[in-house]
Image 1 (tube, rainbow, N blue to C red):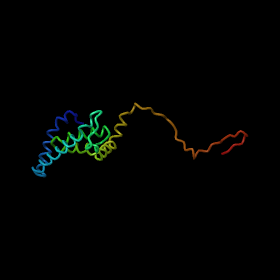
Image 2: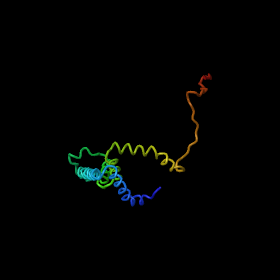
Image 3: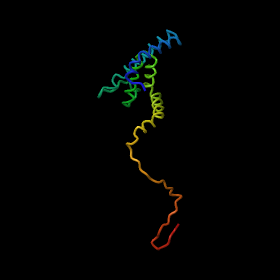
Image 4: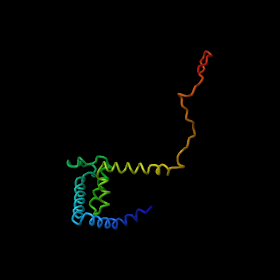
Length: 152
């Protein structure tokens, strides 16, 4: 797996290659319009969220549709910044963070694929209890009554 710092250093190169490919596939004007439109959406979201992180100040009435949970607000804020940066990869990541349903879907898929890795990293740290599974319905027991009779 690649070092995260190397990935961050390669991000501009990846974005330039993707922008050139996008321009070749869709044309220069569409690519330019895409960059301007996603940046405008990012700026719009940041302006709507300007009071979201200020303690004690209520959100403005337009921002009522923003996520009310702190993680959702933070994800939307990071997503808006990623939308401002030019490039298809940062736009895709920004859209995933801005749209709550897409964020939940992506996180759910990630959890489904990586949960076993997270659990397996804990090996040796948990307790193992040996035991036996007994089906109470199938087991027949002798119950001793006080009068000396036995039931099965």
